[in-house]
Length: 278
Image (cartoon, rainbow, N blue to C red; front, top):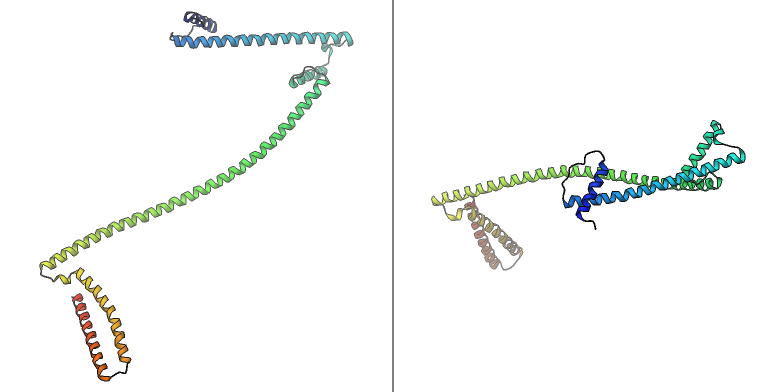
């Protein structure tokens, strides 16, 4: 592992190499920045080495291609006395097209043995690409249908949401109205209770009988209703006596007793009613 002084020296040399004649920007000199710049310089050195290797490889291949082209040209000239310089414009265009096709197909030469497999591979790739394109189109069609259905559903949901908002607003207004009515009724009930209490106190101060208060009258009304219910079986019983043909004197006694009982009940009812009317 390099010492800090060695790292700092290597960083300085690397920055000088990078910026050349331009001034090096100011930066804070500390262990952290030196370490970061050192790692960057190391990566840059490794990258430059790899790039130089690639350049050398390309130069070597270019030299080999140039040598092979020179050999083929010499072969053509020696065997059939043919040179690319002797081609017509049309022939030059055809030759250039052939070379461009070979480069595009990435084949090693322009022979049929190289062209035919490359064209077949390109045709297969074209069919695969077309098939993949059809699959993508079908999938895209399905997605468009799903998108359309989703948009329609979203529109329906938005409309339902608007209706729900309108309904909710109406219900909220009704609830507020009912709440106001309830508050009003509560206030009125309290007012009535206060008025009733004040009236009862006023009547009590004037010496009114407690039996004539509202509560007493309500109790009397309930009792009156109960007494009316009790008279019903007595009336039925009296009617049953009227239908019989017993001893006239005994029947007359029973009838008189029933009449007196009924008159007493009716008198009490009349009294209670009169008291309620007062």
